[in-house]
Image (cartoon, rainbow, N blue to C red; front, side):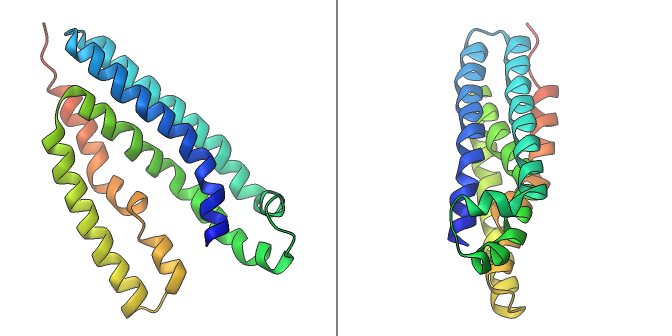
Length: 171
């Protein structure tokens, strides 16, 4: 679990850079009342994160063992961790969308909406984690299934994107 999470940090740092860029530049363009440019920048940050996660995700799916052997020589540990790294590849994209779109929406100035969706996503994640880990006895795999990037973006980000892009004031 720790090995896979350590490897997951690599793509996370990349798309979090796009997230910071989105927050800063969308906020700057929104402050200038240049909403078209703010939307373009937000979408570009999302596209860059999307492409990055697709490339890294494909590596995680098709070459988990070579990647894991860069971090450990224990073959049994590599064999045990490979499916988790492949699972991380699947959730990279929703996680990146969540972490890039959210700050861009904050850059538009709607911090209340993001607060509400974060609270909802956190409660949902905790409830799901309890059920999967304690009731269904899924242990670490249950924790992986209930991570915020899997559940929360599915219920909030698409709506957030459309809600804000359609409601921008036109000057």
